[in-house]
Amino acid sequence: MIKAFVKKISTLSGYEGEGVTFLEEAEAETISSNYVRVKPGQSTSEGMHDDEEEVYIVLGGKAKLRLGEETHEVEKGDVVYIPRNVVHQATCVSDVDFEYICVCNWPDRIPGQVYESHH
Image (cartoon, rainbow, N blue to C red):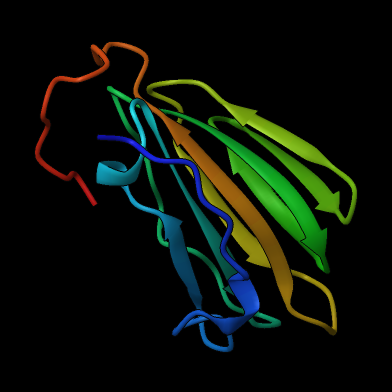
């Protein structure tokens, strides 16, 4: 059964590194979420998902964010929506870490049905 909870992200293993998944797929019906940290000059791996939408909530730093054929500079306070089938990659361009929350959604999932983890 899915249960409500509260977690303190900064206390989870991985927070000080590249990030941590704090809402696992099995803990919710159609979403998961993670905290991501990208060091200055570093990039995330290139991604594209045919079954998943993503929202980024930028917490700190700046990045050049490639979304398909376009590149955007994003910073603290920005929100990014990435639909299915869009190639995306973030490169930290600030002197401080680029930090964001990524919320993933699988819109085709039926609540209560068991799915294997994709991540």
